[in-house]
Image (cartoon, rainbow, N blue to C red; front, top):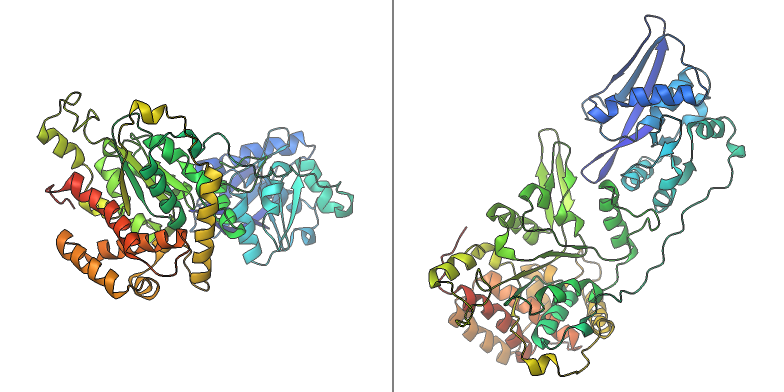
Length: 509
């Protein structure tokens, strides 16, 4: 019979075989097993006894193949128990053909939910199996995969009765998926002033551009970042399944809402290790970078993160994919996210206000120098978040809501969908150098402007392309077909902030 193990974020088909023969009573399991799979024999033995099934005092051998693949997870309890009962003749072998079984057994024979059901269901469909049987709590997750019949079971006894008499299984009850609701807790209308930050956030959301906010404490950097998901375009069904698959592997799905409908927002603490950020382990699991796929990864107090953790971001920010290599297998984790970060201009946070800041010039340089130039080059938008005056804070002027901003973002994204139709990209930030030349043509006036900027700022080709991508998004937000000089000026302004804060700093990396 069939089950599945999870490696990375993919389900891999596993064949479960059981043999009962004469000899000294024993229960042996083989097939490169993790500790939780090895422990399954005690759970299975006790669950079978308490469910009313007696294992005769014979030699029981269970094999999980392929033998060179390490099996992990608690989902093998159910297929092991079913295979033993089939070997005893209590279940017809024909009823197991073309079906996958996943589930953990309690000692009383009840079936408990397990993680990774969604990739297991995808693996079953890929191998053209006819169905998958899972614990009832995992049923909504399995039903999210079209083209394969999902069955939810509550106990081992119910599973045996169903396999012997399929027509007697009661009506399948599922946990209704929660309807998507608009976020009201985090809204841009709550932020007073800071028009430049809101504009930068709008451009970042419309083109999925990376954003860095620099300013003293309490000016709204974190507030703006937390409101970014509220203005991002809604996910389509393919994106929902991609994100749900990652969260299913990590066991982070809400049983009341088995399909992720909101774009994720991840904000790890600055003490996080590089391994937790990128993912990994002996059996690789996705980290924070992959959990932010199709959403936002927010790093507050950016210079406080370890150098190793920050440098681990460089490759996924460029390739939008994370590769984790192990001896037996290589895992590819998706990492297509909007990177947003916030930092203070110095250790105390108040530079250049010398009435509050006591940091030396060397201390300021060292603090900013924790952000390497290669990582800095991967940030499309760098914006200052200045202190508000009392009049700005108390003006009482109603700021624009997230709903209005999202409407403009959605319109710009629709333009991009039409532009990139038939291509493996969705947003302006994902364009290659060749696509930048194709979709970001400049007129004579704009070409002359960029030539002057290129020479004055000493740009690299990477900087040049990133400026054009941001300018393309700014034009899309206004519904303009061609990039104008004001769009280029705005994009150059965001790039020039790097020169303002890091001019003369040593280039790391």
